[in-house]
Amino acid sequence: MTWGVKGVKGYPTGAPQDACGAMLPYHGPQGDDQLYPSQTGPAPYTIQVASHHGTYLPGKAMNVTLIGNVAFKGFLLQARVTKGNTQVGTWSIPSAISAHARHVACGCHDGAVTHRNNTDKRALTFMWNAPPVGTGDVKFV
Image (cartoon, rainbow, N blue to C red):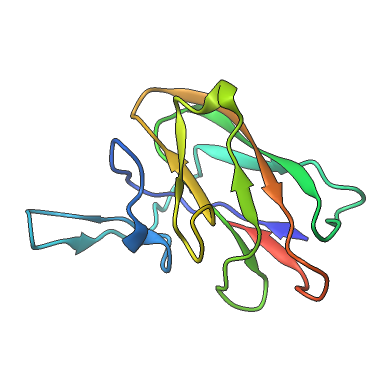
């Protein structure tokens, strides 16, 4: 299992479904959206995965935490197969952080999580529900 971080400029109420594929936001005047590239500096947060020896158990849930090196406002988080961009697994948002996060329909209704507001965040822990047997290696982006 591997994980990586892509930085983005985010919408104040969360990433739109259009951002699912490239994991990049679109901003601009109404009807004239512009793609923004990934940030070039260090990511404002890290992804910590509570796994058993670096693996996941198919069909089981595990904690995935975003931890800010500094306060961060926006994020888009999903799990993908390492050999490609296919979204895998689903996400649960604990009620304790539901005021700060929401689902994005990337691949399925709860295929990704994003911010719900533009308040400062330091750490958010989600439950990732692993895919079935045969999915292969997974990365968090």
